[in-house]
Length: 141
Image (cartoon, rainbow, N blue to C red; front, top):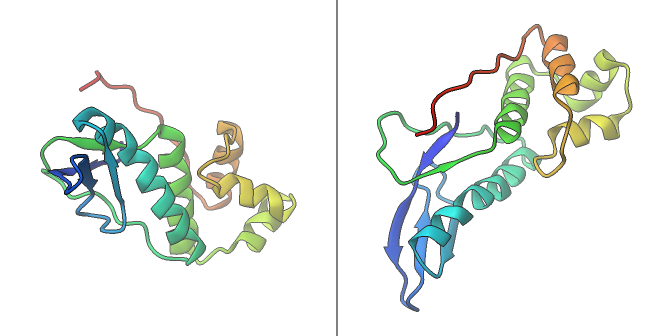
């Protein structure tokens, strides 16, 4: 589970500012604390879309951070893991399309954090990299 610590502070206009120290570009706000926390995962996803477009590494959250957290959806986490594995293996989108015997737009959708990809497609992509997905269910925090 990717959980990033959120730093909350009062903004000059009375709203609550939410910043993610591990990802300095991820900044959002809310009318109150709860809204600011709810918006933080979307801010992270937006920043990570930019990172992926620029072929930058995705920063991992620091261990031992205290709440509040922005927790990314499981599908987003899987897509970020695929992107990271592709970077590490130096496998580009065109090569991944060749390995999966599909068209490039399908790989674009597979890496698109806003697209609802199917788990079996992600599993196939990981297999093409010599990896596999494992699902873990835990008690809610």
